[in-house]
Every structure is written in structure tokens, then in C-alpha cells.
Length: 141
Image 1: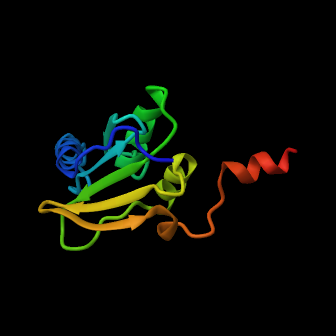
Image 2: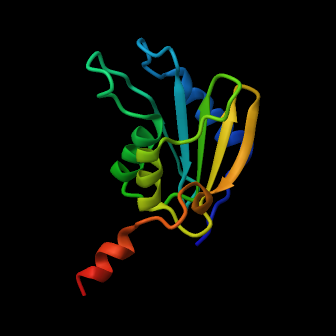
């Protein structure tokens, strides 16, 4: 599966940085943004939203996936994730599983910092031998 309308890296970086700027992170002081490219050139963004009942907040990736699903889209072609600091800010384990639900064989994860893309990783490298919808559906046959 591939995009019918490819988005540029510049478009995705603009979207992910705008999402990060809206993060609600008063406790960790670590704003994170995510932007998903859908199959028809759509962009769905999300930011982390913390809560005083830490850690009951939402990750940026979770927020972006929720926006995507609300729009009726169920496929992630690419996802960009941005955080500050020197290290790579890759999706947490829970978000990797959430991304997996909507990923396909060519889904890529772009890990970004303030300067731009730091790494591009095929999703299956982030969550090898993953459990997905096809496993559940196959068990019901």
C-alpha cells in the first residue's frame, strides 16, 4: 500500500512542529508532537496532553491516531514524531502497538528534533514480530 498523494518532508515537519507547540506538558516540561500522513495526502496531528493524575495523559501519537480515526481514516503511511533533547524521541511501547494497528508493510516512522528529521525507521524495525489485527481475525475463523 502506498500514498496516492505523497506529502513532502517540509509539509510533515511543519505539521509535527505545530503539533508540538500545542502540547500540554506542565509536569514533564517535555512537549511532543506527532503528525500522520494518511493514504490520500491527509495530515492528522496530535500532541501530548498530560494530567495531574500522572501518567493518565495521552501521548502525541495516540492523539494523532484518534484524530485520524475520527476522520474515518484507518491507514498510516508515515508518522513523524518530534521531541526536544539530544536523543531520539521514538514512540513508547504502547504507541508502537497503537501505530501497528493502522500500519502497513511500508509504514515509516520519522523521528525528529528541533532541527528536523534525525532518523527514518521502517515500522517493522520498531516492533518486530508484532501482534496485529490479522492475528485476532485469523483466530476467529
